[in-house]
Image (cartoon, rainbow, N blue to C red; front, side, top):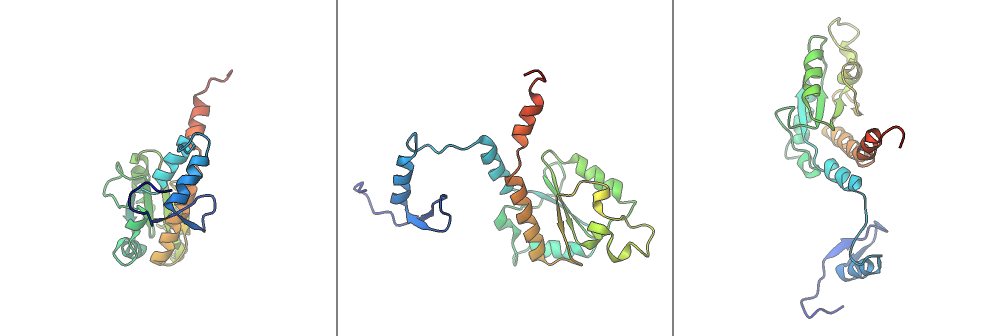
Length: 197
């Protein structure tokens, strides 16, 4: 393919193989062989899920020592920003809440209220053994909640006491995989359809 302009040498990934790379000219040839020319067909749901998974805005809710590891994951060394994770200070702008550390029974209504203030779709990451099951403080303390999942539904559990920043990054990647597979739009259309149709 010669267009009279400078030769394009940039490499791109071809989705069909995933592991091979090819020059842009070969990709253009593949696109011309598709039905409809240069139009790729996908569902709106896949595009929305792709965008939603790559722009997660967490409400960071650090309650104890796990919060230090969460802050480290957001810092420059581990840089969760490269995955599209940008922390927010208010639940009204967040779509993910990361509960890091032990939660007391008195704090449980606050966590629930913050989760209810988040817009849909919303997700929860339980970070550390204290947020997951009460941790080492549960058995000798009357005031510790036995897991945050008794108050709000949890999507991803990150184990550890405290978990390393790499573990939180892996939890975020698992959440992105879960968001990518969601069929929220299809389910909503199914609920809106009349029963007799």
